[in-house]
Image: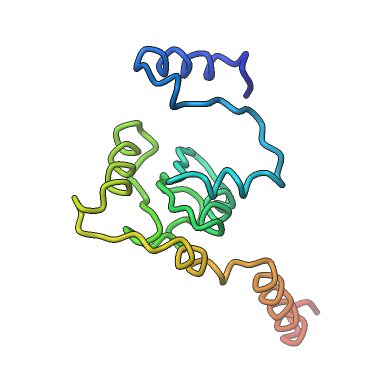
Length: 150
């Protein structure tokens, strides 16, 4: 919400109190065409959302080969392969998200191995715009041919 928001001010206080000012950057709004650079540079994406209609941000991250930790929102349960391309934690609480981040960043503790970035990208290939558009066109044909619109 920007540098003047209460949330960002609160987060800046926490970052400073932990001595993390050299490791944390508040970059503000990032233009859509720059997002792949951010996703690809990250070790993980954390999605603490209370609500998502689908989970496009998670898909964008996975399309860049970056695993995610997310709360159970939208359709993430359909494309997250637990321990392989990310984790779905029980709630967006700081404790739950921290546990997911710990598991993702410390695979030795869980015995699970994250997929390589090219395999993470491949894990969501069925959600490409081309595939989704083709599925939608086929479903539209099916409805028209069934006479349900009559």
